[in-house]
Length: 326
Image: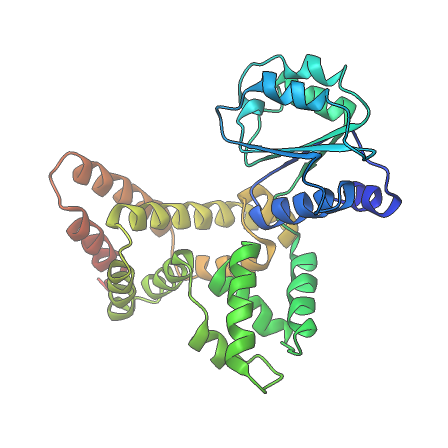
């Protein structure tokens, strides 16, 4: 990201860019920043856009070879092409592409062994955009609210992330709702977060596992029914329960190593700010209870898939079993 920012600031650009990764917000943000910096938005004569997996590379090359019309540069934007996950000869073309042409690729996924990926990395700039580190995410969210005349405590900001998740587009949407809802109030409170923000499914699963660990069967079942009401499929809920118990099991093993939260988060694949919350949940499960719960989840999954149990009933029985006091 720093390289792209420097290119924009200096006005000196690579012949080709690849923006890829899981964070849609950042991919689109840097796509738009590059596009506006390379070519004025009103210059439609020298701008071409291609999208999808059926792109005609011959047409792309023909346009790329065309001299810009009353401009120093021609820009081609290519999105979701899948070119970085299949064999093609476009890597060879890039070596001969005119200096007056710039290409921006925007992809969700790539294969780093791909010939085109290697060519873009060698000839241009590759940026993997998988979301901001916790520290930067907090700065970004607080600054977004501040720009709109709102303030939030760090504690409530972390609660906001736990509730909504760390997808930046979702966070932006929820912050816009909070800004509108709070009206003349300058402080974003926890009550506002509970009143306004749409909680992600994983957040409810988190609460459900909390309730299971505390043996609060009524709360665990209420959360399950809440998920069903918003049309979450029982098998999707079961998958998330399995994922959650798997994380708890990994954390239980890693806790013996005395690793920092950032290291634990990296090894397990969770946001750093959730580590402490997961670690506190681990304490609610005694002995080999987490392993036994995982084994039961897998067993019930098989029974559902083979028709021995209905999915909704199967998941409900698991929750009752896990949250029982016997």
